[in-house]
Length: 247
Image (cartoon, rainbow, N blue to C red; front, side, top):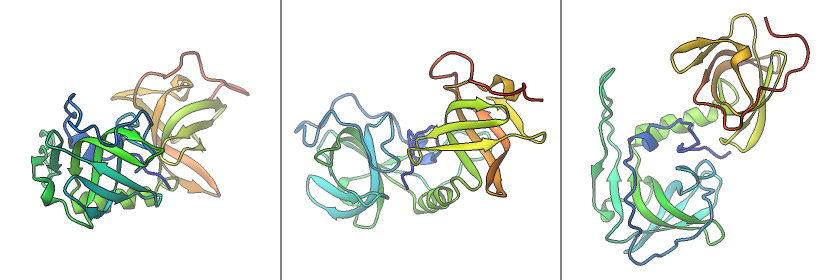
């Protein structure tokens, strides 16, 4: 299953979903000076690419003087090319206090990344060549990686996220970048809806909106407990509805 880092990333994300992508600073505008691995494709690494499809993530299987080889969660092998212009960072394992700013990642050397580490590389991805010319590389904190794997395992069981494609009575269909698949959830009288911090109703959910859903499977149906709209609709127009208006 692909997992956006929302990036992680994205996902992507989004959606997010992952603290690593949020902690990482924006990559510099200057690409690596050798241009290695630069392409026009969109990433299909950890989560189908993150940062708008301009990155991949995975476990390091090889370290060389100018590149890393990584294996993504989908089993694909990518080459991450880096140079003197590539920012190499380590995600902090320190948790910020409630309400405090996130602890920024620290600068490290390329040699500080080893086989077995999990990294995310931002840059132009050539999906055909399975390579990325990295503008930045972030070494993820092992505890965050564990949490991400746990979160991935619970996708579709306790949470969903994606872009709404239809609203039929109390049934909402969405397309998720997490696994590039369609999912549905049901709302009931106990479901709460919010846009940012403002309470809304099911009638305010529009096609094109990006949502994050918490809930649980009940008799084979995902029933939402909370639905959070993460931004304005991607495409305008009211949601397609069938049947009587929701209560």
